[in-house]
Length: 128
Image (tube, rainbow, N blue to C red; front, top):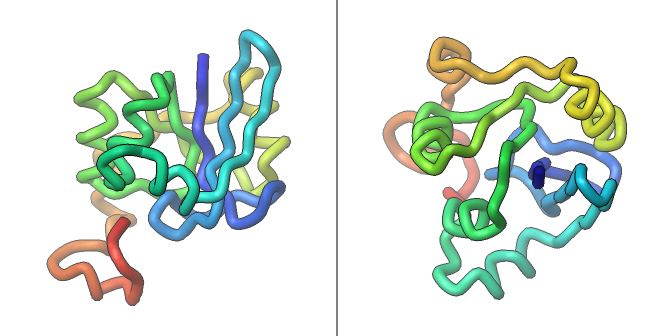
């Protein structure tokens, strides 16, 4: 299974993918970790649209501190599960995922924390 994590640095989780500088990929069958700069992923993705990047990576799941309703819906349409991160340590979250300690996001959690309603400038960042 391949799992994606939003990262601020190669060791630290970002709050979500929209605010990440890197994406960490963990492949459990090979116990392999790959950290790729976000700009590199977008540059070579073909469409340059971030959801397409995740979908093209044949993911089983993502692990993130936050997720919007729209992202949860899009991932769900492609059968990609979304789990809530525990803290911001990349390696600890990999271990928590492997040991099945992370809880899946649900719609109510996304509604409560979704601050990106309306215009893209609502959160002060550009949409990715």
